[in-house]
Image 1: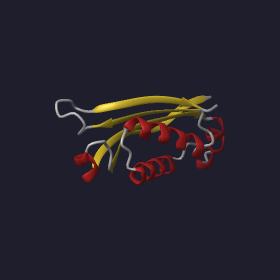
Image 2 (image 1 turned 60 degrees about the vertical axis):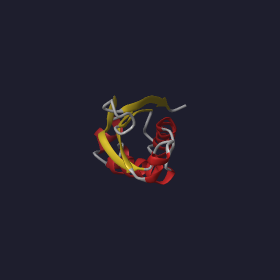
Image 3 (image 1 turned 135 degrees about the vertical axis):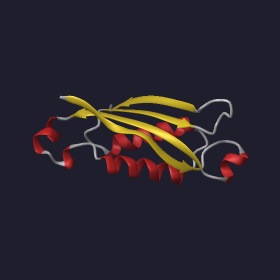
Image 4 (image 1 turned 180 degrees about the vertical axis):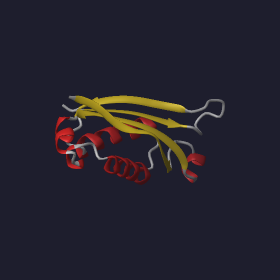
Length: 119
């Protein structure tokens, strides 16, 4: 019984970018995170230990992004996906979209999207 759980529009204020002005002050990034996993154990037990814990998901990704102060959102996405696959045992697939609203003045946002599967 594979299903998808996740969060939308998670805002993390962080240092991100390659230009000096981007390294001087935090700016928001917005994340959509989806995790595919077998819901059978969680549905049977009604226990968070058998599910994708949203608090763990959000706190882990937020801490990574704030601490690493990435230059590229591509690197941010790869490391966040790897972290989620390592911390959420049930996860079979992780999909991420990271948007950077302040990146291009004439666009709503720049973004990267990826999907990673457990090996």
